[in-house]
Image (cartoon, rainbow, N blue to C red; front, side, top):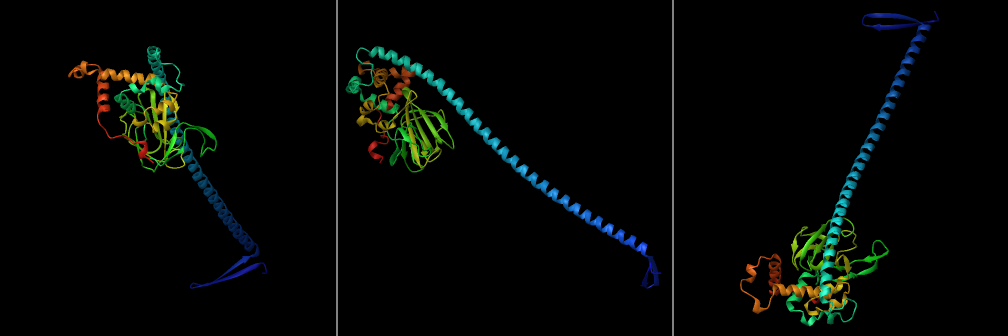
Length: 354
């Protein structure tokens, strides 16, 4: 009887007596223990699966973020490639056009030098350049046309020149490099004017380098560049007149403060813009001795010869001669002569911008 466990269960229906042997009791305890261990194992396994699922979700989120970053980098690279490709095409076009211009200019200069060889030395380095040009014979109308067609005057009202033309220590790169223009310090939003009649050859918007930038193409192979602009008011291919507002100064691109980077070029050669900024009708002759890279004798002679085309002697003028002319060149030159001879408000003079 010692190996038998007696269990009495009392209820509403009476009392019942159960008898369990020790063997059955051990089997029941073992089954209960095994069931408990199974439940604990299942619970542990479920927790492990939940942990692995959380890890997989976090890894998936990280992969998605990495994929989004790679996609953004790919888009940036594609945009940069497109911009570089566009710049390359523009450079190829500009180089081809410049080659044609240089060839045409070379032919014209060779022809003109042959005609002037008897009275004009070929060297441009002589100190008597003004005498060779014979400035006393240059008509006032020719001087006005010259100052309309070749960059001159202040492109904007500026405080001072922070960096001149030539070699300088770059304020950001920290090494000596060639500075192709001058930096004119001015408040952001200052109006920038075209310094001569011309065509907008290039409009560029970049986050580095020149930033927002304009290049104007002028007569006789001259060009002017305006960089680090806040905003631009003209489009590529637009014809602009001297004094027109083409942009507003800013601080875009590789720049340490608000200013205008201004360049003057002749046949692709950078010139010191300072003599051209100071150039006006009152000191018409000074630029010829300041800048030796321009063939001034040939250029002035060309302007004088063009002046004789649109302004013949009074004895040879007829009231309807211009109206009856079918030559586009004569029509254009006549319109230019009228514009040059008409009274106009002078552009920004050197003494007014301090």
